[in-house]
Image 1 (tube, each protein chain N blue to C red):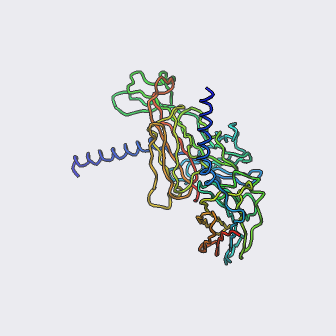
Image 2 (cartoon, rainbow over the protein chains, first blue to last red):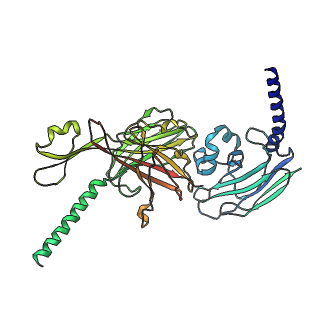
Image 3 (cartoon, chains in turn blue, red):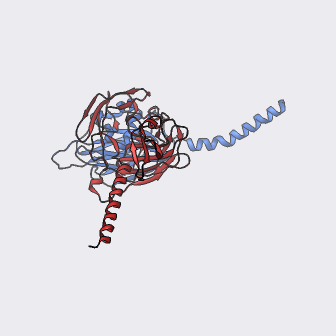
Length: 177
Length: 278
Protein backbone atom coordinates (compact mmCIF):
# COMPACT_ATOMS: atom_id res chain seq x y z
CA UNK A 1 0.00 0.00 0.00
CA UNK A 2 2.78 2.43 0.98
CA UNK A 3 4.75 1.39 -2.07
CA UNK A 4 1.80 2.07 -4.32
CA UNK A 5 1.33 5.50 -2.74
CA UNK A 6 5.04 6.26 -3.26
CA UNK A 7 4.83 5.25 -6.91
CA UNK A 8 1.76 7.40 -7.35
CA UNK A 9 3.48 10.49 -5.92
CA UNK A 10 6.49 9.83 -8.13
CA UNK A 11 4.26 9.64 -11.15
CA UNK A 12 2.49 12.86 -10.17
CA UNK A 13 5.81 14.64 -9.61
CA UNK A 14 7.05 13.52 -13.02
CA UNK A 15 3.80 14.56 -14.65
CA UNK A 16 3.88 18.04 -13.12
CA UNK A 17 7.54 18.45 -14.19
CA UNK A 18 6.46 17.72 -17.74
CA UNK A 19 3.32 19.83 -17.67
CA UNK A 20 4.37 22.89 -15.67
CA UNK A 21 6.78 24.41 -18.21
CA UNK A 22 4.15 24.28 -20.99
CA UNK A 23 1.59 25.72 -18.57
CA UNK A 24 3.89 28.62 -17.78
CA UNK A 25 4.84 29.09 -21.40
CA UNK A 26 1.23 29.84 -22.38
CA UNK A 27 0.52 31.96 -19.31
CA UNK A 28 3.79 33.97 -19.36
CA UNK A 29 2.95 37.63 -19.02
CA UNK A 30 4.13 40.24 -21.50
CA UNK A 31 7.34 42.05 -20.45
CA UNK A 32 7.00 44.48 -17.55
CA UNK A 33 8.34 47.28 -19.74
CA UNK A 34 5.89 46.61 -22.58
CA UNK A 35 3.22 49.16 -23.34
CA UNK A 36 0.87 50.09 -26.15
CA UNK A 37 1.01 53.72 -27.21
CA UNK A 38 -1.99 54.97 -29.14
CA UNK A 39 -2.03 58.01 -31.39
CA UNK A 40 -5.68 58.81 -31.92
CA UNK A 41 -7.53 61.59 -33.65
CA UNK A 42 -11.09 62.80 -34.05
CA UNK A 43 -11.74 64.55 -37.36
CA UNK A 44 -13.30 67.99 -37.64
CA UNK A 45 -16.78 67.45 -39.03
CA UNK A 46 -18.71 70.39 -40.47
CA UNK A 47 -22.37 69.90 -39.73
CA UNK A 48 -25.22 71.92 -38.29
CA UNK A 49 -25.74 69.73 -35.23
CA UNK A 50 -22.31 68.66 -34.10
CA UNK A 51 -22.00 66.90 -30.77
CA UNK A 52 -18.74 65.49 -29.47
CA UNK A 53 -18.69 61.76 -30.08
CA UNK A 54 -18.75 59.02 -27.47
CA UNK A 55 -15.54 56.96 -27.69
CA UNK A 56 -14.62 53.57 -26.26
CA UNK A 57 -11.22 51.96 -26.71
CA UNK A 58 -10.73 48.47 -25.33
CA UNK A 59 -8.68 45.29 -25.65
CA UNK A 60 -10.03 41.75 -26.05
CA UNK A 61 -8.17 38.46 -25.77
CA UNK A 62 -8.25 35.60 -28.29
CA UNK A 63 -11.48 34.31 -26.71
CA UNK A 64 -13.12 37.65 -27.54
CA UNK A 65 -13.32 38.48 -23.86
CA UNK A 66 -12.60 42.06 -22.86
CA UNK A 67 -9.48 42.38 -20.70
CA UNK A 68 -9.24 46.17 -20.37
CA UNK A 69 -11.17 49.29 -21.23
CA UNK A 70 -8.42 51.77 -22.02
CA UNK A 71 -10.42 54.93 -22.73
CA UNK A 72 -14.09 55.85 -22.33
CA UNK A 73 -15.07 59.38 -23.36
CA UNK A 74 -18.76 59.78 -22.64
CA UNK A 75 -21.43 62.09 -21.29
CA UNK A 76 -24.70 60.95 -19.73
CA UNK A 77 -24.89 57.25 -18.86
CA UNK A 78 -28.31 57.15 -20.53
CA UNK A 79 -26.48 57.03 -23.90
CA UNK A 80 -23.77 54.53 -22.94
CA UNK A 81 -25.84 51.86 -24.69
CA UNK A 82 -25.30 53.68 -27.99
CA UNK A 83 -21.73 52.39 -27.86
CA UNK A 84 -23.51 49.18 -28.91
CA UNK A 85 -20.62 46.79 -28.98
CA UNK A 86 -18.73 48.12 -25.95
CA UNK A 87 -21.93 48.27 -23.87
CA UNK A 88 -22.88 44.69 -24.74
CA UNK A 89 -19.43 43.22 -24.21
CA UNK A 90 -18.16 45.32 -21.31
CA UNK A 91 -20.20 48.21 -19.93
CA UNK A 92 -23.37 46.45 -18.84
CA UNK A 93 -21.48 43.94 -16.71
CA UNK A 94 -19.60 46.35 -14.45
CA UNK A 95 -20.86 49.76 -13.29
CA UNK A 96 -17.80 50.25 -11.06
CA UNK A 97 -15.46 49.72 -13.99
CA UNK A 98 -17.45 52.20 -16.05
CA UNK A 99 -17.30 54.82 -13.29
CA UNK A 100 -13.57 54.23 -12.85
CA UNK A 101 -12.59 54.68 -16.48
CA UNK A 102 -15.11 57.34 -17.61
CA UNK A 103 -13.85 60.71 -18.73
CA UNK A 104 -15.43 63.66 -20.57
CA UNK A 105 -16.10 63.76 -24.30
CA UNK A 106 -13.48 65.58 -26.36
CA UNK A 107 -13.51 67.91 -29.38
CA UNK A 108 -11.90 67.17 -32.74
CA UNK A 109 -8.13 66.94 -32.43
CA UNK A 110 -5.12 64.68 -31.90
CA UNK A 111 -4.75 62.62 -28.75
CA UNK A 112 -2.25 60.23 -27.25
CA UNK A 113 -2.85 57.61 -24.59
CA UNK A 114 -1.14 54.48 -23.35
CA UNK A 115 -2.27 51.05 -22.32
CA UNK A 116 0.09 49.77 -19.62
CA UNK A 117 -0.49 46.09 -20.45
CA UNK A 118 -2.56 45.47 -17.30
CA UNK A 119 -6.05 43.98 -17.31
CA UNK A 120 -9.06 45.49 -15.51
CA UNK A 121 -7.92 43.82 -12.25
CA UNK A 122 -4.38 45.21 -12.48
CA UNK A 123 -2.66 41.98 -13.59
CA UNK A 124 -0.21 42.00 -16.48
CA UNK A 125 -1.82 40.16 -19.40
CA UNK A 126 -0.34 36.95 -20.81
CA UNK A 127 1.54 37.06 -24.09
CA UNK A 128 -0.63 36.05 -27.03
CA UNK A 129 -3.15 37.22 -29.58
CA UNK A 130 -5.36 40.21 -28.81
CA UNK A 131 -7.64 42.63 -30.62
CA UNK A 132 -7.60 46.40 -30.26
CA UNK A 133 -11.13 47.88 -30.53
CA UNK A 134 -12.33 51.41 -31.14
CA UNK A 135 -16.01 52.34 -31.18
CA UNK A 136 -17.01 55.94 -31.92
CA UNK A 137 -20.62 57.11 -32.06
CA UNK A 138 -21.91 60.65 -32.52
CA UNK A 139 -25.37 62.04 -31.84
CA UNK A 140 -26.98 63.07 -35.17
CA UNK A 141 -23.92 61.48 -36.73
CA UNK A 142 -22.53 58.09 -37.51
CA UNK A 143 -20.86 55.17 -35.84
CA UNK A 144 -17.60 53.48 -36.66
CA UNK A 145 -16.40 50.24 -35.18
CA UNK A 146 -12.74 49.41 -35.71
CA UNK A 147 -10.86 46.19 -35.01
CA UNK A 148 -7.11 45.63 -35.20
CA UNK A 149 -5.61 42.23 -34.44
CA UNK A 150 -2.25 42.19 -32.69
CA UNK A 151 0.19 39.75 -31.09
CA UNK A 152 1.59 40.85 -27.76
CA UNK A 153 4.93 39.27 -26.80
CA UNK A 154 8.53 40.39 -26.78
CA UNK A 155 8.52 41.86 -30.29
CA UNK A 156 7.61 45.53 -30.80
CA UNK A 157 5.26 46.45 -33.66
CA UNK A 158 3.18 49.29 -35.09
CA UNK A 159 -0.11 49.33 -36.93
CA UNK A 160 -1.68 52.21 -38.80
CA UNK A 161 -5.47 52.21 -39.02
CA UNK A 162 -7.03 54.06 -41.95
CA UNK A 163 -9.36 56.98 -41.17
CA UNK A 164 -13.13 56.44 -41.19
CA UNK A 165 -16.06 58.89 -41.16
CA UNK A 166 -15.86 59.34 -37.40
CA UNK A 167 -12.14 58.70 -36.77
CA UNK A 168 -8.97 60.31 -38.08
CA UNK A 169 -5.52 58.72 -38.20
CA UNK A 170 -4.95 56.03 -35.59
CA UNK A 171 -1.59 54.45 -34.94
CA UNK A 172 -0.79 51.87 -32.31
CA UNK A 173 2.82 51.28 -31.23
CA UNK A 174 3.74 48.34 -29.05
CA UNK A 175 6.99 49.21 -27.32
CA UNK A 176 9.31 47.36 -24.99
CA UNK A 177 11.45 49.91 -23.22
CA UNK B 1 -73.58 35.09 -72.57
CA UNK B 2 -74.90 31.59 -72.49
CA UNK B 3 -76.46 30.11 -69.36
CA UNK B 4 -73.57 27.74 -69.11
CA UNK B 5 -71.01 30.52 -69.05
CA UNK B 6 -73.06 32.41 -66.48
CA UNK B 7 -72.97 29.36 -64.25
CA UNK B 8 -69.24 29.14 -64.70
CA UNK B 9 -68.79 32.77 -63.64
CA UNK B 10 -71.02 32.25 -60.64
CA UNK B 11 -69.03 29.19 -59.68
CA UNK B 12 -65.77 31.11 -59.94
CA UNK B 13 -67.15 34.00 -57.87
CA UNK B 14 -68.23 31.55 -55.18
CA UNK B 15 -64.77 30.01 -55.06
CA UNK B 16 -63.17 33.46 -54.73
CA UNK B 17 -65.53 34.44 -51.91
CA UNK B 18 -65.00 31.15 -50.15
CA UNK B 19 -61.24 31.63 -50.52
CA UNK B 20 -61.41 35.11 -49.02
CA UNK B 21 -63.46 33.87 -46.10
CA UNK B 22 -60.95 31.10 -45.47
CA UNK B 23 -57.98 33.48 -45.44
CA UNK B 24 -59.65 35.90 -43.04
CA UNK B 25 -60.41 33.20 -40.52
CA UNK B 26 -56.96 31.66 -40.82
CA UNK B 27 -55.08 34.95 -40.53
CA UNK B 28 -56.58 37.18 -37.89
CA UNK B 29 -54.46 40.29 -37.55
CA UNK B 30 -51.38 39.28 -35.54
CA UNK B 31 -51.14 41.17 -32.27
CA UNK B 32 -47.72 42.41 -31.23
CA UNK B 33 -45.84 44.80 -28.94
CA UNK B 34 -43.13 47.24 -29.91
CA UNK B 35 -40.89 48.62 -27.14
CA UNK B 36 -39.33 52.08 -27.59
CA UNK B 37 -36.03 50.59 -26.38
CA UNK B 38 -34.72 47.13 -25.55
CA UNK B 39 -31.72 48.25 -23.51
CA UNK B 40 -31.38 50.67 -20.58
CA UNK B 41 -27.96 51.99 -19.52
CA UNK B 42 -29.14 54.96 -17.46
CA UNK B 43 -28.27 54.68 -13.79
CA UNK B 44 -31.40 54.85 -11.65
CA UNK B 45 -33.57 53.53 -14.49
CA UNK B 46 -35.61 55.03 -17.28
CA UNK B 47 -39.14 55.27 -18.69
CA UNK B 48 -39.86 53.17 -21.74
CA UNK B 49 -43.02 53.16 -23.81
CA UNK B 50 -44.74 50.28 -25.64
CA UNK B 51 -47.07 50.21 -28.61
CA UNK B 52 -49.57 47.37 -28.87
CA UNK B 53 -51.53 46.77 -32.04
CA UNK B 54 -52.72 44.05 -34.40
CA UNK B 55 -51.72 44.32 -38.03
CA UNK B 56 -50.46 42.47 -41.09
CA UNK B 57 -47.47 44.79 -41.66
CA UNK B 58 -44.44 44.43 -39.45
CA UNK B 59 -44.60 47.35 -37.03
CA UNK B 60 -47.41 49.08 -38.91
CA UNK B 61 -50.16 50.19 -36.50
CA UNK B 62 -53.63 49.02 -37.46
CA UNK B 63 -56.12 47.64 -34.93
CA UNK B 64 -56.25 48.89 -31.33
CA UNK B 65 -55.40 45.69 -29.44
CA UNK B 66 -55.67 46.36 -25.72
CA UNK B 67 -52.91 46.62 -23.15
CA UNK B 68 -55.18 45.99 -20.15
CA UNK B 69 -53.61 42.57 -19.63
CA UNK B 70 -50.04 43.82 -20.03
CA UNK B 71 -47.58 42.72 -17.40
CA UNK B 72 -43.88 43.08 -16.77
CA UNK B 73 -42.03 40.06 -15.39
CA UNK B 74 -39.29 41.56 -13.23
CA UNK B 75 -35.70 40.19 -13.04
CA UNK B 76 -36.63 38.32 -9.82
CA UNK B 77 -39.71 36.74 -11.45
CA UNK B 78 -42.48 38.75 -9.78
CA UNK B 79 -45.06 40.42 -11.98
CA UNK B 80 -45.90 44.11 -12.17
CA UNK B 81 -48.54 46.10 -14.03
CA UNK B 82 -47.67 48.96 -16.40
CA UNK B 83 -47.91 52.50 -15.05
CA UNK B 84 -50.00 54.10 -17.80
CA UNK B 85 -52.33 52.46 -20.29
CA UNK B 86 -54.07 54.34 -23.09
CA UNK B 87 -56.15 52.91 -25.92
CA UNK B 88 -56.36 54.82 -29.19
CA UNK B 89 -58.01 53.98 -32.48
CA UNK B 90 -55.11 52.14 -34.06
CA UNK B 91 -53.04 51.01 -31.10
CA UNK B 92 -52.85 51.05 -27.34
CA UNK B 93 -49.80 52.20 -25.43
CA UNK B 94 -48.38 51.73 -21.98
CA UNK B 95 -45.34 53.05 -20.14
CA UNK B 96 -43.22 51.47 -17.46
CA UNK B 97 -40.32 52.69 -15.34
CA UNK B 98 -37.46 50.18 -15.60
CA UNK B 99 -35.09 50.55 -12.69
CA UNK B 100 -34.18 47.07 -11.47
CA UNK B 101 -30.95 45.62 -12.88
CA UNK B 102 -31.51 42.64 -15.14
CA UNK B 103 -33.78 41.28 -17.84
CA UNK B 104 -37.53 41.95 -17.83
CA UNK B 105 -40.15 40.17 -19.91
CA UNK B 106 -42.99 42.31 -21.21
CA UNK B 107 -46.07 40.25 -22.04
CA UNK B 108 -49.54 41.08 -23.31
CA UNK B 109 -51.38 37.77 -23.18
CA UNK B 110 -55.11 37.63 -23.68
CA UNK B 111 -57.33 35.01 -22.08
CA UNK B 112 -57.73 31.72 -23.99
CA UNK B 113 -60.68 31.66 -26.39
CA UNK B 114 -62.70 28.61 -27.47
CA UNK B 115 -64.62 28.18 -30.72
CA UNK B 116 -66.63 25.14 -31.69
CA UNK B 117 -66.94 24.28 -35.38
CA UNK B 118 -69.85 22.08 -36.50
CA UNK B 119 -72.12 21.12 -39.37
CA UNK B 120 -75.88 20.83 -39.12
CA UNK B 121 -78.80 20.46 -41.49
CA UNK B 122 -78.59 19.51 -45.13
CA UNK B 123 -75.73 21.74 -46.17
CA UNK B 124 -72.10 21.02 -45.39
CA UNK B 125 -71.32 24.59 -44.36
CA UNK B 126 -69.05 24.79 -41.34
CA UNK B 127 -70.57 26.95 -38.62
CA UNK B 128 -68.87 28.38 -35.57
CA UNK B 129 -70.07 29.10 -32.08
CA UNK B 130 -68.11 30.66 -29.21
CA UNK B 131 -68.23 27.75 -26.78
CA UNK B 132 -65.82 25.32 -25.20
CA UNK B 133 -66.27 21.56 -24.97
CA UNK B 134 -68.12 21.77 -21.66
CA UNK B 135 -70.53 24.46 -22.86
CA UNK B 136 -71.19 23.22 -26.38
CA UNK B 137 -73.69 20.46 -25.58
CA UNK B 138 -76.26 23.03 -24.44
CA UNK B 139 -75.74 25.30 -27.43
CA UNK B 140 -75.42 23.06 -30.47
CA UNK B 141 -78.51 21.91 -32.45
CA UNK B 142 -79.70 18.35 -31.93
CA UNK B 143 -78.63 16.73 -35.17
CA UNK B 144 -75.09 17.96 -35.37
CA UNK B 145 -72.02 16.43 -36.99
CA UNK B 146 -68.26 17.06 -37.36
CA UNK B 147 -68.05 18.89 -34.04
CA UNK B 148 -64.65 20.14 -32.98
CA UNK B 149 -63.62 22.75 -30.41
CA UNK B 150 -60.46 24.76 -30.82
CA UNK B 151 -58.49 26.60 -28.16
CA UNK B 152 -56.76 29.78 -29.35
CA UNK B 153 -54.18 31.66 -27.34
CA UNK B 154 -51.62 34.27 -28.33
CA UNK B 155 -48.71 35.68 -26.41
CA UNK B 156 -47.31 39.04 -27.51
CA UNK B 157 -43.99 39.52 -25.80
CA UNK B 158 -40.60 41.16 -25.74
CA UNK B 159 -37.62 41.59 -23.40
CA UNK B 160 -35.95 44.66 -21.92
CA UNK B 161 -32.57 44.51 -20.19
CA UNK B 162 -31.32 47.06 -17.66
CA UNK B 163 -27.56 46.78 -17.17
CA UNK B 164 -26.43 43.18 -16.78
CA UNK B 165 -28.62 40.54 -18.48
CA UNK B 166 -30.28 37.90 -16.25
CA UNK B 167 -32.15 34.61 -16.86
CA UNK B 168 -35.06 34.43 -14.38
CA UNK B 169 -37.61 36.32 -16.49
CA UNK B 170 -36.93 33.96 -19.42
CA UNK B 171 -38.47 31.01 -17.57
CA UNK B 172 -41.64 29.50 -19.01
CA UNK B 173 -44.89 28.98 -17.11
CA UNK B 174 -45.80 25.65 -18.74
CA UNK B 175 -48.99 26.80 -20.47
CA UNK B 176 -49.95 26.86 -24.15
CA UNK B 177 -47.21 27.75 -26.60
CA UNK B 178 -44.09 29.37 -25.17
CA UNK B 179 -40.71 30.39 -26.49
CA UNK B 180 -37.62 30.17 -24.34
CA UNK B 181 -34.68 32.13 -25.79
CA UNK B 182 -31.50 30.01 -25.79
CA UNK B 183 -29.64 32.99 -27.21
CA UNK B 184 -30.26 35.74 -24.66
CA UNK B 185 -32.54 38.41 -26.21
CA UNK B 186 -29.96 41.11 -25.40
CA UNK B 187 -27.26 39.14 -27.28
CA UNK B 188 -28.94 38.92 -30.67
CA UNK B 189 -26.43 40.43 -33.10
CA UNK B 190 -26.55 40.82 -36.89
CA UNK B 191 -24.79 37.99 -38.71
CA UNK B 192 -24.69 35.74 -35.63
CA UNK B 193 -26.70 32.54 -35.13
CA UNK B 194 -29.74 32.71 -32.82
CA UNK B 195 -31.46 29.76 -31.10
CA UNK B 196 -34.91 29.62 -29.51
CA UNK B 197 -36.76 26.67 -27.98
CA UNK B 198 -40.51 26.13 -28.18
CA UNK B 199 -42.67 24.45 -25.54
CA UNK B 200 -46.32 23.40 -25.59
CA UNK B 201 -47.86 23.00 -22.14
CA UNK B 202 -44.36 22.83 -20.70
CA UNK B 203 -42.96 20.13 -23.04
CA UNK B 204 -40.52 20.78 -25.90
CA UNK B 205 -42.65 20.93 -29.06
CA UNK B 206 -41.65 19.84 -32.54
CA UNK B 207 -43.41 21.25 -35.61
CA UNK B 208 -43.86 24.83 -34.43
CA UNK B 209 -43.93 26.99 -37.56
CA UNK B 210 -42.42 30.46 -37.26
CA UNK B 211 -41.71 33.32 -39.61
CA UNK B 212 -39.34 36.11 -38.68
CA UNK B 213 -39.70 39.48 -40.39
CA UNK B 214 -37.59 42.61 -40.14
CA UNK B 215 -39.31 45.98 -39.68
CA UNK B 216 -40.14 48.16 -42.69
CA UNK B 217 -42.29 45.84 -44.81
CA UNK B 218 -44.14 48.96 -46.08
CA UNK B 219 -41.03 50.10 -47.88
CA UNK B 220 -39.87 46.99 -49.62
CA UNK B 221 -41.44 44.74 -52.22
CA UNK B 222 -41.05 41.44 -50.43
CA UNK B 223 -41.44 40.29 -46.85
CA UNK B 224 -37.90 38.86 -46.86
CA UNK B 225 -38.95 36.69 -43.96
CA UNK B 226 -36.99 33.86 -42.42
CA UNK B 227 -39.04 30.64 -42.13
CA UNK B 228 -38.24 28.04 -39.51
CA UNK B 229 -39.87 24.91 -38.07
CA UNK B 230 -38.92 23.57 -34.63
CA UNK B 231 -37.00 20.26 -34.53
CA UNK B 232 -37.62 17.25 -32.26
CA UNK B 233 -36.33 19.20 -29.23
CA UNK B 234 -38.45 22.24 -30.04
CA UNK B 235 -35.42 24.21 -31.23
CA UNK B 236 -35.15 26.67 -34.09
CA UNK B 237 -31.96 28.31 -35.33
CA UNK B 238 -31.58 31.24 -37.72
CA UNK B 239 -29.29 34.16 -38.49
CA UNK B 240 -30.60 37.73 -38.79
CA UNK B 241 -28.27 39.18 -41.41
CA UNK B 242 -29.27 42.81 -40.92
CA UNK B 243 -29.47 44.76 -37.65
CA UNK B 244 -32.93 46.02 -36.82
CA UNK B 245 -36.20 45.22 -35.08
CA UNK B 246 -37.81 41.89 -35.89
CA UNK B 247 -41.15 40.22 -35.26
CA UNK B 248 -41.30 36.45 -34.92
CA UNK B 249 -44.75 34.97 -35.43
CA UNK B 250 -44.82 31.36 -34.23
CA UNK B 251 -47.83 29.06 -34.45
CA UNK B 252 -48.50 25.52 -33.34
CA UNK B 253 -51.57 23.50 -34.27
CA UNK B 254 -52.17 20.20 -32.60
CA UNK B 255 -54.72 17.77 -31.21
CA UNK B 256 -55.43 17.84 -27.48
CA UNK B 257 -55.85 14.57 -25.62
CA UNK B 258 -58.11 14.28 -22.57
CA UNK B 259 -58.71 18.02 -22.47
CA UNK B 260 -62.15 18.88 -20.99
CA UNK B 261 -62.24 22.25 -22.80
CA UNK B 262 -61.07 21.63 -26.37
CA UNK B 263 -60.25 18.99 -29.00
CA UNK B 264 -57.41 20.89 -30.64
CA UNK B 265 -55.28 23.98 -30.19
CA UNK B 266 -53.95 26.77 -32.37
CA UNK B 267 -51.55 28.73 -30.21
CA UNK B 268 -49.16 31.57 -30.98
CA UNK B 269 -46.14 33.42 -29.70
CA UNK B 270 -45.53 36.82 -31.28
CA UNK B 271 -42.10 37.87 -30.15
CA UNK B 272 -40.47 41.24 -30.84
CA UNK B 273 -36.69 41.57 -30.63
CA UNK B 274 -33.80 43.63 -31.89
CA UNK B 275 -30.73 42.40 -33.74
CA UNK B 276 -27.87 44.67 -32.72
CA UNK B 277 -25.13 46.09 -34.91
CA UNK B 278 -21.83 44.21 -34.79
